[in-house]
Image (cartoon, rainbow over all chains, first blue to last red; front, side, top):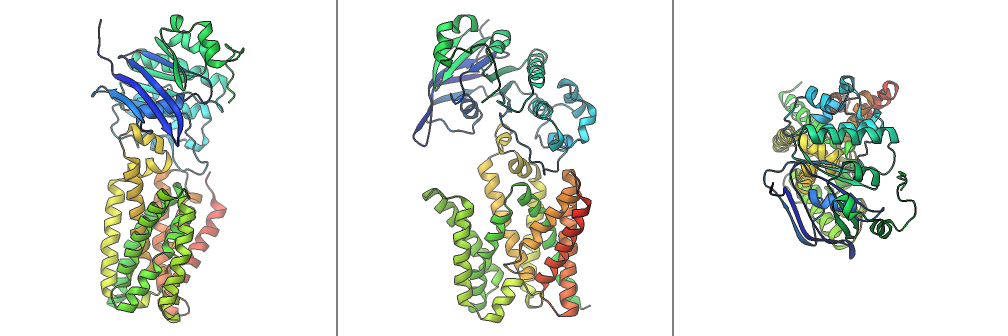
Length: 231
Length: 256
């Protein structure tokens, strides 16, 4: 089956204040595909996602989104100030074109109804991430961009968010780009993997693209499969 | 109560609603000190208005916009933070403005004097206040989103730059309509104190914005009435004192 890609990135480079952040990145993603972007800290993963969303403007190269694509973006950092007076319901009502009711999106993302009137600042980081996911799903996106948080999320919370993402991906038929530094996840869920360390070190199906040599090159470390969440 | 005084109070109510609304964004976006400093920049414009006998509010407005433009220009040219540049501009403006007007008029410009506001100024203020209220209500969601989570605005196809510029323009307009009542030095009494007090009293957005507006209206009208009836202090000073009193009370009712 040949389907047109919903996103095509060609020879993308990003320079910020004379510092090369990304160099010559090319890949594409088709409907309902899962792409994992992996790489060590500071390798440009989050920056790549931010560039795809339009927060950074690429220095050269092209990013072509299919016109019908609707993006749901979950940034790595979503800090809620402890003095922000806003309930979960109020936050979600800021979404411009919701396609689901709050009840629907709550059941999709497994959020308890009682959270509705909870203050955002009172949520744990794991709960906040789920609310963010609800936010991203609310307007029926065709692709979700998930930037893995590096710290502050308990491992239990982290496992369930990936299960949830996986479930949503199959029930809502969305494509998914996950930024991660967890190799286990890649083998479990991803159709394609892109190894990033400023430049593209590998790209393809995980079992072919992720050779031991590549992994060594990428992380330059011996603690490969130990996915600690330290920065 | 004369008809003119009722007219003044009506105008003040609209000005306070606009200030309370904008103040709630300033607190969320942590721009309170920046806007406070920005209000001082209006002084040379007001001074020019007094000197050359045109409406001081128009001079103030011109200088506010000029300074926003300058802050943006200098920010791009140097690498200084917005607040640092505003800091430089505001003392310069204060010094230049003080040079231009007499001591009596300076006190009025600093602390506000409701008695010296002309009918034309009242009319201009009311129209601008109504404009601010309409624009905020119509753009409420994007303004809030850009204030609390700018990164999320991109996938919503909300332009962060445009929305932030809109907010800056709204801040400048709000300052310009408030300084007649409370003066350039006490402008934060109209926007910042009501919003922080409201924050203490509320745990959701709706009540926060509601209380911010109510407190701004009550304290400004109260301040004007106290100043008008007793004659012992400027309207700006009375408004600040009432506001600070509300803030003090709110400390005992903090909602987390």
